[in-house]
Amino acid sequence: MAEVDIVIRGGTLVDGTGSAPRKADVAIDKGVIVGVGEISAKGREEIDASGLLVTPGWVDIHTHYDGQATWDERMTPSSIHGTTTVVMGNCGVGFAPVRKTDHDTLIRLMEGVEDIPGAALHEGLSWNWESFGEYLDQLESRPRDIDVAAQIPHGALRVYVMGERGANREPATDAEIAEMKALVREAIKAGALGFSTTRTMVHRTADGDLTPTVGAADAEMVAIAEGLKEAGTGVLQWVSDFKEIDHEFNLITHLVELSGRPLSFSMVQADVWPDQWRDLTSRLDAAAAKGLPIKAQVQGRPVGLMLGLQGSVHPFVTRPSYAAIAHLPLAERVAKMLEPAFREKLLSEAPEAGHPFVNSLAGAYHKMFDLGNPPNYEPAPEKSIGARARASGQNPDEIVYDILTANGGTGFLFFPLHNYTDFNLDNTLTMMRNPNTLFGLSDGGAHVGAICDVSVPTYMLTHWCRDRSRGERLDLPFVIKSQTHDTAQAMGLLDRGLIAPGYKADVNVIDFEHLQLRPPHMVYDLPSGARRLMQEADGYVVTIASGEVIYRNGEPTGALPGKLVRGAKSAPAAA
Image 1 (tube, rainbow, N blue to C red):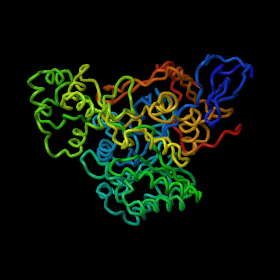
Image 2 (image 1 turned 180 degrees about the vertical axis):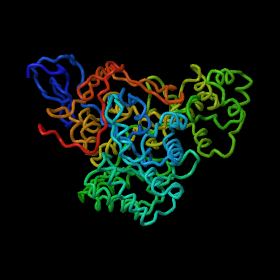
Image 3 (image 1 turned 60 degrees about the horizontal axis):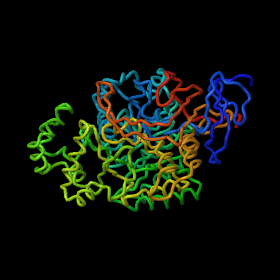
Image 4 (image 1 turned 45 degrees about the vertical axis):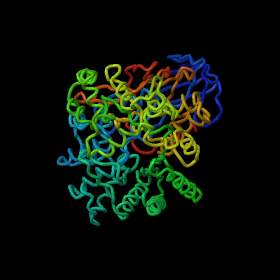
């Protein structure tokens, strides 16, 4: 081995196995890791990693880049946070299979469930496909910075087979169920990584209707599981309220037993059901004891709403005076809001009726926080807007008003919607430490006007491994393994997630001491000029995908080695 493409020298290697950090060089050639240890070969590029961490690239298994991946070369924000593989098609929403008559239906579904602007989707999507296989071909035709993998979404499948009846959640006939089964089998064989569905009442279309898959009969789900069994590969991804927890958990257990395929579902602590996650965890543990591959996807910080004048929601959005100026450009809105008479009038108004969620949110000052810089995602209760108002004798609306109108109206308040019932992340810590959970739920590419959890992989290092002061921390090797090896294994991507000879050369070189999240901010770079929340980080010195440097110090190099991942991947022979 006289010369190789890249040698990363002298770094502190955290290789994804969970082993303790160690000093080691890493040699990369032709997109593959070819040596780890003391490397004598010269690299055509030499990267000095002295004093820096060297890790595998993150494998993010819960994203929604289904549209963006068809028009954009860069899977940001994920790729600027060290992620080198993203799995999309989650939550039963996506854009294939599709008939020409149903384009708008799938856009309205994605817009409602995942808060991706319909205008951007209408302009950005080419619709050069009908079948799921043709959609994969479209993805494969575009170069991009990192790898993408797709799952076949139940919502699109149901509308394709049943038309308007499927969108209206009518029961499928035996013939329609058989067709869904065949199409799932066909999609898996074409390269779908799995199948996803949603059964929660929270997910709704842009018109406020329940998604097509809510209430789908057990027979329909059983047939789809049989389709995966016949394909011989693939995973199941599940979202549910688990309101009827016995039936729902028994159903997913049956599907896993029948198909022989792994299943993961989303798990958070919701204020309305604060102990449901404990029940689910007990059931998970019991299933694991039986050898069933069922896991819960959990997130290492609150599922947090960003409340701001540029976003989808904020505490004044239902006040009549604000509604009258909501159409104005941001600068004009802020100028109007800074007028003393307008401020006094708006603050004196009651919210308009008919918006129960927004109005309950607007009055929940005890769970509303100034996010700050650097962002604080585990704020103490005494830092809430409500606590600050009590301490200062102010009306909490006045504090909110000042924060939202500061800096040209670009600031955000943080509202921890889930995982913050007890005003700390101790329960989340318990979830993450359970061997039957997976790190997930970043929702990269989605909720672009209200949530920016895509930076969670970075946060796992900064907060949980270095900065947390309100409780226990996590070991760095555990966190690295959890968002590389473990997530890759869960999806059947056995060729990545480790730094070892033969594995795909997806690597991060990180200045751990100075790794830091920047505050979220709004950009307007989606098709049609639509908005999306963006968040960067300092400290990613180099990100390598498929053996090519794609980012240096947070800036793109122009390299686009990312590919479509078709189906499960075997472990390298060298392993």
